[in-house]
Image 1 (cartoon, helix red, strand yellow):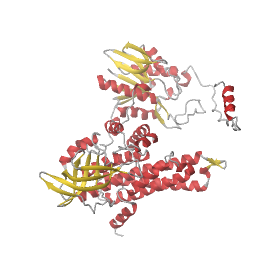
Image 2: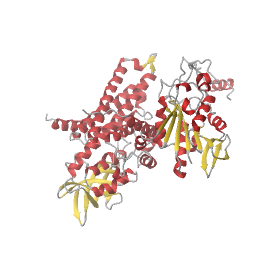
Image 3: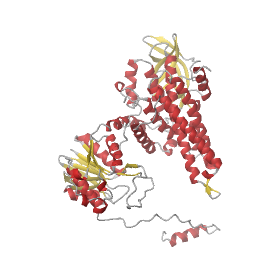
Image 4: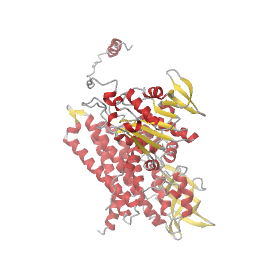
Length: 259
Length: 372
């Protein structure tokens, strides 16, 4: 079974995230980029399926040139090859246009299964898997906490608020995974060295047959009109205990409707 | 000219190991493991070997390792030191694997090194006795020929991970002089007693041998040469580890100096604190240069390895001890508490200073080497 894993480079999970003043998009230059954490679980799941039942794992990313770092990380974990969709015309694409671009890029890679994390830590929309399924006509298997691959079928346990649903579909399918699914492997130095020699294909808008007016800031249906910094933390209220500290705390909690 | 700038791939290795240790060896785990008898988590050791390939990183491919160099290994030791990793890594890789590799004993290397690289075997080198002399000059443990093999009688002290190691390499006096012997985990007549250590993150033991069957490693009388080379390689590993520890102490101090407000401003804005922090940076940077100089001399199999390793060992462990002490000062009262990690680094720094010879003895050795 040939698998494509979609990965995204995001600003370091723990770094302060900023929007750039000029075009109100996420500032990706000023902070260190890392692979979106949930995508690591997606790579791991793809590698486990490959190790159990064969096939090839291709990494697909859309992002600026710097995103090649994230590609290298996925390759060092053990993916076989990578496709990098990189074009300045893609800058500022929203979820809808991103799903269009990714769907076009997916057409260039033969595959049975697409795996990705349920959301990215920077945008946190959680809509790309569903949108991709809609655009490609593949089955939508989202929020998977367990994946089982059969002959031309995929069965998942879909995480819900109260438990899980078992969902099964024929391939091709789009699977999004939650972090409960596995423990992503840590790349070894051997893997890191091997990653340098693995094939990496670069796609521009033209290569993938993407219409430039349908992507990027201008092509996006949604845009950021305005943003402001979070207000600084206010000083808290100090309760002095003069024998009635307990009841004052209770009063405060009651006034906030917490008790 | 020696070039030891770290490559992109080595930097990726660092990131991978750092992430692994942040997940598997946070302070809470260090504190849990240092209170156990074994002193390490076998599951983490297995993952280090099977997934990251760390124990076998510098072991040749034909002996089950990945065949990379001591510079990559130094990156791993540096990160392990920064995280205060409780692990048989130093004893197994920094000492025992290096002793085997220095022995030129093909059969022994083929038997033990693949197991070490695979994480199936932990090992240590027992060479110090009760006097605490790291040169083994006063070795009283004796080896006597017995049939096809040998038997050992005597004791060894301050054996790193001596209570848990699956393979114990022992320096003993044979009729031909100091020689290296291998003793199996379950060999007859071995008694292992854990020693109380100030640095609880690295366990030590006293081992007693009474008619213990042993296997000669290398040739009889070659022990002093093997020990000298192993000691240099062990010093290079300790130097890298100490550099990581010193860096972490500086990071802790600088973070605290920025966050702690006193008299209405961060304490880092006061000269007395500023000077401490900048002195720490000078030491950490110099330590890193010294550590990677020693590691690249080891990687190149340079004849100057012994001098470089002694230099790095003396400088890096002194730097670690000083930054660990200053870190406590910058933290003030909270730095003296059990709950704060500062004391764990302070104790590791002290034990690293003394292990494999204190800084003064290494400086004396360097002085002899350069003829002053």
